[in-house]
Image (cartoon, rainbow, N blue to C red; front, side, top):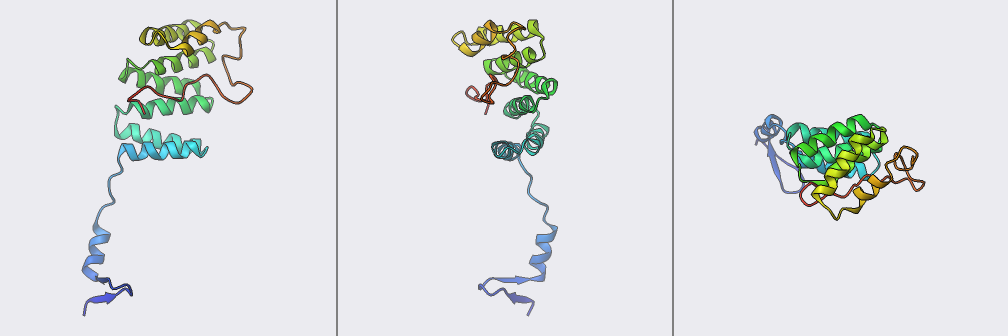
Amino acid sequence: AGRLSQGNGARSDAASTADVRETPPPKILPQTHFAAGQLLEAQGQFDQALVQYQRAALLNHRHVAAYHRMGTLLARMGRHREAIDALTRAADLRPDAYVLYNNLGFEYAILNEWDTAEAHLRRAIDLNPTFERARILRIVRLPERTEVAGERPDGTTPLLDASPEGID
């Protein structure tokens, strides 16, 4: 008598409805936030993507990929000091990831902090001697070469979105 037909053959009663209301929502994992961030970033929703990367890092303070994407996204948004903070955190967690040092070098170059930029680019090259992008950025790091410190005419930057194995 306490059961109601739902038209599709399934039955429900007041007790099972109460159970559903009392059940807490499932815990969202850092990987879920990270994936949501990637999707939002691909859709150009940068502010929302950043929030998802931040949530992933908040839930897992060792989520290198979240810090890396945060840094790359903050750089794209022109928030270079914040990008450096996020990329530094990622590099602290993965000191063998040459791409992170390349991106740090680029961010410091944008801020005209050439010695620090060069130190990070040298570190990228030390970690991967065949890494041409860091070599090229070091060569064109002079202040009069302003195209290094900003967007190219096609809208891209030398900042690397691609990651070495294990970051993303």
